[in-house]
Image (tube, rainbow, N blue to C red):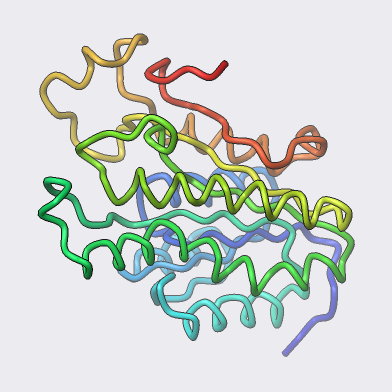
Length: 238
């Protein structure tokens, strides 16, 4: 049963059952947010339960599952202040070996994973006077890496979408930004990777979560349309 619009701050995290998404959910909960988590594995439901939040088992590739997530959040708390869009893993392989189906799946995993929930929460944020959307992207969005072809291509497109969205909805006090993580300890280390990183180490999930926390805070209220590199110095911007 709906409780109406509450005074609590509420965050939705998609693909939040493990890795950077789960770390972001834990950090936002520690910051005082009520959290709703979508995960395909069931881990999101367990994490949400441990945090006193709402968990939905489903896919961010499913409009029906995303609708259940947003509707459940609204029924419980009546608002959405933050949307964090995390992602699973799309197809990899030699560039021209990727099939049309691989590229289509990459678009689903790395681009439409943002567009679909953004469509659902934007009208809510407009009605309540603002909100922020944070997308966990990749360091390879602007300097693509042969190891992550579909991620690089579609997250480059995500950067363009973010600029378009930010221009359109800034007057409604709705912000959107991308975090561009480098190699993070949510995945096993591979030989030779450390040599590519000026800081000489993998990043930590909690370091990415801390950036999510900042972008969700009042202190980041004048930041929108940006791509924040959190990669230990692998890439540079002018």
